[in-house]
Length: 160
Image (tube, rainbow, N blue to C red; front, side):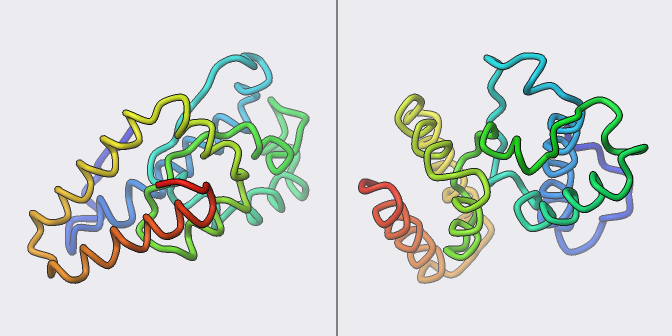
């Protein structure tokens, strides 16, 4: 899913900007491509809380309504009405981003995934934090991030 074209060479931009943008593009393609309605039992679980999709969701909805000739060619259901069919993990690195994610796709879509496939989510958290540690982030920052995530998981889901 992540193709590199050379525009994001500095400052670790492929990971910081490129991947979240490409994840949002994938979500838009699934929503506007009518995939979720054509295959109602098919489940996509998008990494890192759906990338930048939660923040551009309003822009996508606006584009769908003002340019149906470009956006509504394959799917007659507005993207916002399909948000509840999306599945994501909850690894977003920020408490406010997690709140936005929950309000976008709904607590149930994150919670059910956590219950049905807790091993995958646990591995996601474990490997990602190990990866961040390798980047020489201060240990205090990493611990704070872990505790923030645990706090919000407890707050939203009742268990860590």
